[in-house]
Length: 110
Image (cartoon, rainbow, N blue to C red):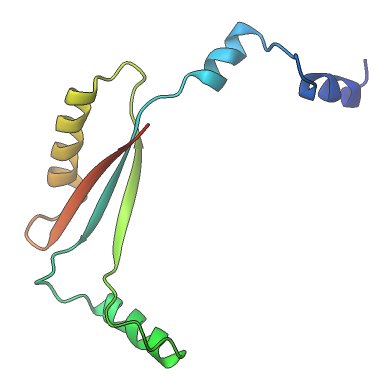
């Protein structure tokens, strides 16, 4: 059977993928998103530069910009929620954020 015909057959309704593919497609694991940003008491020069640039472009309603970053972390499929929360908070505190000048927030995406 030509490649194009095989691809068309696979995209049709009713196609039942083999078990080895089904487990990869439908096995969704839990994900965590860790947001890290400067504490409000810490100067954010990049945020100030962005605010200044936006004001210069005519966006006069922008009063302040705080720059930050986030990390998407995929967890093992068998991870328990309570254990994952504890571990993600420890990782955020010890590895991803500098607790002296940064704050973090952990969210779980399911």
